[in-house]
Length: 162
Image (cartoon, rainbow, N blue to C red):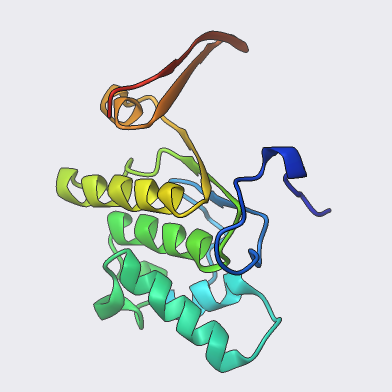
């Protein structure tokens, strides 16, 4: 099954077309491949294109989340926060049109969480649609728009002053 974002919901095209239409980031993903962080990101990009190009995209994504020095480590050798950043790198590597992030700062210390939020804002400025699901009011307040949902109903849909 392929999930795509309808044309009307996509941000304007910026740069090369996305390799992946939709990418997700979750706090814990038991299906993480037992391979080094860089190889896991490379796997996310897929089998299309040349291996060297995929490896460059994967390396750039790993470095973008501050894990260049840990690229050769397996998931059991990474802290919870490093595993979270690896998941974010996997999502970014495919250049998706939409990133859905469930509690993207949940396993991170305050400083690293702030850098990941800045990265998400940067991606948004570059044309990627970012959807953050969080219970953390500080994280929600850092977003450009906040939609509060309770019991399946939208309570509020407001811009924030981030």
